[in-house]
Image (cartoon, rainbow, N blue to C red):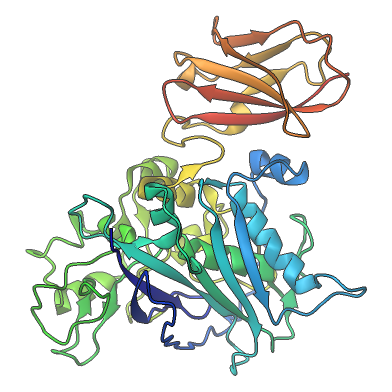
Length: 448
């Protein structure tokens, strides 16, 4: 099946797009890039958002990634002695974090570039290839390539995500592990890369302002090639992104053209009413936000690259959801996207390494393993939300070999695994997988 495709260029730390069309068979793509500025806010931020336990354990123990990423590095300095430099190590750390968070059977390809963008206040940016539509679908949604490939189990011959970062800055901090703490006045490079890859994986919408075209107004829908149409009421302008489908203003979907004609000043007003009325209503994201709609960034003056496609800065700055807000402060360290963001990604179609947030409205820490270290048996204590599910329980050694795998019965909210005395004293991974939902939990256990 031939796919209509487009590329969205996210240039600078904020989200700004220029659309270029191509077909899957075309090898040479004319790339149009806009470089926008990311001015320093002048406000230091000493927030530290640590990577969640399940992902930390998988990363630190070098477990098999949930998704395979391949990065083509261009322009990144070599280390001394020869090998990856600190810049590339910090970039790869962000890639490895995402590989512990999302699952796909398809390799995700990233084209990473370390370049002087010509503007000292620019941090960098990313670009996602987009495919449309899903086979058999009539929803007029354009999907980021990495997600499209996962959902359709198809292979893209080109890069899924393009990104570039500003080599001219002297205030980068390059973490070498997930404990890196940026000094005051320095920007955490890994956090910026994590943010941009998040956009490349699909957290992005088409909402823009058309400037003086047909009068100042906002618009979302693009034509079949992903272009802004020169016609005010083009019947072919029907394409949106998954993000757009979950945005609402004052309880009305932003794609409801009876309320928000596209294009229109009414739509632009929705993008620029800074009163908490522009929100994301994706169900799992809302559940992870305590049942409240997730507020999106809508400053009173529309700012290309920051408005519409981020979580609200004032609401989520300093919280576990800070990664996908529009600003990163000097000294701010964010190594986890937070459950609101991962909830949206799951609603969009991604599968999470840790299991579905929709079936675990609780922290992974609420699944208790005892004793740990163990000698002969293990007891798994489950929270009330999942005690009625059926499970498979497996134990895997650090080389990925399955030591045991069996169905498990729950009794009084607990699962007991016995006859483990013959295991060698070593580190293992215990995986609890539901037979009735997408829930999958992995815990580190030690045999003494």
